[in-house]
Structures are given as structure tokens and as C-alpha cells.
Amino acid sequence: MDKFVITGGTPLQGEIAISGSKNSALPALAGALLTDKPVTLKRIPRVRDIRTMQRLLVDIGAKVEAQGETFQLHTARIVCPEAPYELVKTMRASSLVLGPLVARSGRARVSLPGGCAIGSRPINLHIFGLEQLGASIHQSHGYIEAEAPDGLRGAVIDFDRITVTGTEDLMMAAVLAKGETILRNAAREPEVVDLAELLARMGAQIEGAGTSTIRIQGVELLGGAEHTIIPDRIEAGTFAIGAAITNGDLTITGCQPDHVGALVSKLQLAGVDVTQPGPNSLRVRGAGRLRSVDMTTEEYPGFATDLQAQYMALMTQAEGIAIITETIFENRFMHAQELVRMGANIRLDGKQAIVAGPRELTGAGVIASDLRASASLVLAALMARGETVIDRVYHIDRGYEKIEAKLARVGAKIRRVE
Image 1 (tube, one colour):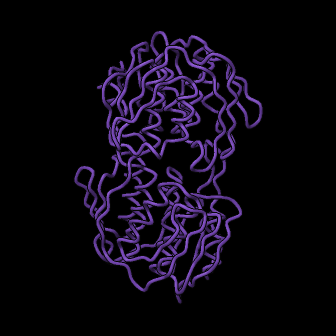
Image 2: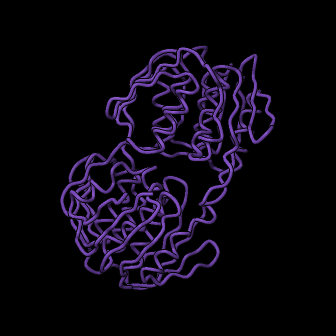
Image 3: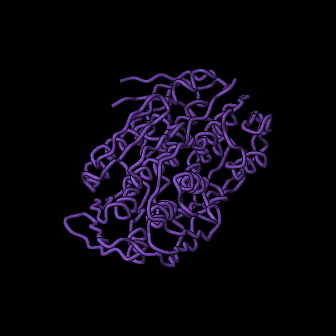
């Protein structure tokens, strides 16, 4: 397994460009299954999760041509409406094909996701919604098997809690259902809005994406479309924290600043200088001395859970005590003990992490437990004294496109070791 070797102490300086959003590209790729016409998607990040989804779509029957960041997909017919365990176990977003497959072919067989390092992310809300839309569903041999031979029909679906992938999956299913579907307590994330814009270009009738109530008028068929994926707000946030933690001066280009508004607010409260030199860029300059600022993860537009680990690394360098509360996923503090190995003062208490700082971090051998935990360890290593070796960096490859190359271009002393 590959490792990162990082020598800390160098401020990040210069410009760094943001890739397309992984969390937006994955549902968009699944959405291409809804039509027998060609779909072109631009600004697709070349990360491990995208390669996994590409394999899945090909197995289902899609023809996928990838040229750089542009993917051309054409699913003339569904050959095998199945998402096998071998793929789902490596990427839970594989379950996003459930809705499109049932809507288009009338049946789907998708493996249950199983466990996950950052806690349970059950598929039950997807199943509940599809049953409301008229699908017959049962579980057998570790798989969810859904059938709707006469097609889906519109319904009112009230989510008992906000779910991003559940909102996306059922939105895709509903676009081909007969009649009107209303999704209440829907996720408001930018990735949901981006998917709705793609589906609209394909001929879907969707209103309210980006609000808690989404209305969908079903259509008989969808056509082809061309769509550009939004920038990755989590990557942008990660690099913004990187500039702050290394006391650097970094301009982040090709981003959408309003998508990281909650993080920017916390950084400014901590004393970091964050400005917006253009409509699609942020400049982040280190504060010299950081102030501790409490943070609680929330659904969008609140502070993203996918930036919690990176923010914790930053708070190890802030003066005072910061209380970080995780409300989205259980078991998402696995990076804390690795930061402690580097010298951080962190105490865990249920859903809260109490971080006291500033503490000098020193290089150590650490292990990445999940995607965002990997990013937090990279950030900590960038400012730590000495050399840090991060094992299991295949986690970070799932969601960051060539992160070591991007960081090296702005001054980081980082290399990949096979």
C-alpha cells in the first residue's frame, strides 16, 4: 500500500486549483442510466471512487468513454441491473444506482453496503422511498431486490431525517414515475442542486432543489444532455485549512466560495484572513496566532461533517479550548488518536472532542482510517516538526485528485512512496 512521507514546517504559498466534486459526479454518473441517449459530463475528478463507479456502470450496460475530465456515457439498454457486493463494499455511493435502475428497467439488485469506518449510513431511507413510489422490495442473501414491472408512481415522501444520497436516489427514481412526487425534509446540499440541473437538462421537471421540499413531475422519457460538475467544496475547504494551519498565503481558484461559507466564518473567527479576490476564488492567509472556536457539524448550509477532521487538526494549533461536536455520523473521531500520537491534546467525550492548544506537533508514523481522516493527517503533517509517514493513503485517493502533486506545487514537502 502507498504511503505519504511529509516533512513539515513549510507554509503553503501560491495558487491551487479545485477539481470537480466527487460527491456531485457520482450521482450524475448514476443519473446517466436514466436515458438511452448519450450524456456528456465534464469536470469529473479522476479519483478512485469515480473509477469504481465507472466499472459498475460498464457492468450494468453503459458504454463509458473517458478523455481527461470529460466522460461520455451511453446506456442503450440495461444489461445487468445489479450492483455487486465486490464494488459496493469499496464505495457506498454505489447504492445510487438503485433508483435509476428501478425507474428505467423496472428492477434492481443492489448489495447492502455493510459496515463503514465512520459509522452507519443505512440504505433504509432509500428503500422506504422506493416503496412509497410503488416498488416491491425484499432482502435476500445480502442484497436489496426491487421490482416495479408496471413502473413507479408519484407519491409524497417525508424523510424522518435528512439524507443526501437518499434525496438524490429518490429524485432520480421519481423523474420517470407517473404523476407528481414531493420530497419533504430533503437535503439542500449543492450536490443535490447540481444533480437536479443535470436531470433538468435531460428533460426532467424538478422544482425546489436546494430547499427542503422538492417537487417532481414525472415524464415518460429522458433525453441526452451535457453538464459540467460543480467544484469540490470539501477539497476547497481542505486547502483553505491547509493555508491556515501552515501560516501560509494560498489562493484557491475554480471554487464556489458560497459553498464553504460555514467554514470561512469559523476561520475568520479564529483570526485567519479570508478574502474573495474573484467570484470563483478565495485567498487564505495565516493568522500567526489562532484563536480556538467551537464547531458543530450540521447539514448544509451548516458546517460540513466532511471538514470536521481537518478542522480538528487546525484547532490543535489554536490558543484555548475548542469543543468540536459531531452530529452527522457516529465513530467519526478515529483521526483523533492519530493526532494525539503527533502531540495533540484531544479528549473524546461521546459526540464531542475537546481540543486544547496550541500544541507543537511532531512527525510520527500514523494510519489513515477513512477519507477525511486522511486529509486531517496530511494537514497536521504539513505543519509538524520533522517527518510524518501516513499509511493507507488509498483512502485519500478515493476523494482527492493528485493531492500530493497539488500540495507540492504550493511548497509542501510531500512524496508518495509505493
